Each structure stands twice: as structure tokens, then as C-alpha cells.
Image (cartoon, rainbow, N blue to C red; front, side, top):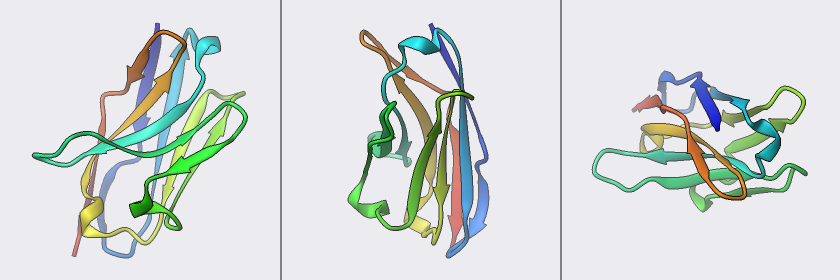
Amino acid sequence: QVQLVESGGGLVQAGGSLRLSCAASGSISGIRAMGWYRQAPGNQRDVVATITRTGDTNYADSVKGRFTISRDNAKNTADLQMNSLKPEDTAVYYCNAQTLFKNYWGQGTQVTVSS
């Protein structure tokens, strides 16, 4: 089992920045990719950014150039630096960890961007 705890959400004005952090614990040796997803009210949960153990990253087109995902394998953390935030970035953000057999999710953290 893997436990994920997110932190760093909050309220920010458009154009501002936030940094989300995800700390993994438990059977962490089995974690392959980690990522951040988001879900706005009435919408499905969509990928924001992912990162492999070796540091390969992928981003949703809507956040490219504004968001940066990073990972510290020694500390078992995955962070999401979000710059130039827009009102449409408002959502609950979830940390994800993938093992060979299962996906794990954090409890989510609210990000609200005011215009």
C-alpha cells in the first residue's frame, strides 16, 4: 500500500503562483510514475503533469510553460510548481502514484484562482 498526502493548495489571484507538494509513504519502492491530476466541479479528473522515476515529464497542453513537476526520489515527494495561474486552473488537485498493479490517490487539495 502507498499513502499520499498533498499540501500547498489555497486561494490566489490570477497571475499568481502556488506550489503543491505530495509526500508518499508505505510501499514506496514499487512506485513508478507520479503525477498530478485535477478535477473541476462537473468535470472529469484530468491529468496535469506526470513524472517517471528517471525524471521524464509530460504535461497537459493547457499548463505547458506555466507548471513544472519535480520529484525527489530520496524524499519520496513530487511537487507541482504552478505559475501564471488562471481562473480556469481552479480545481481540486490530486496526487497520483502508479505501481505495477495499482494506482494510488491522495485526498486532494483545493486550488482556487480568482480573476
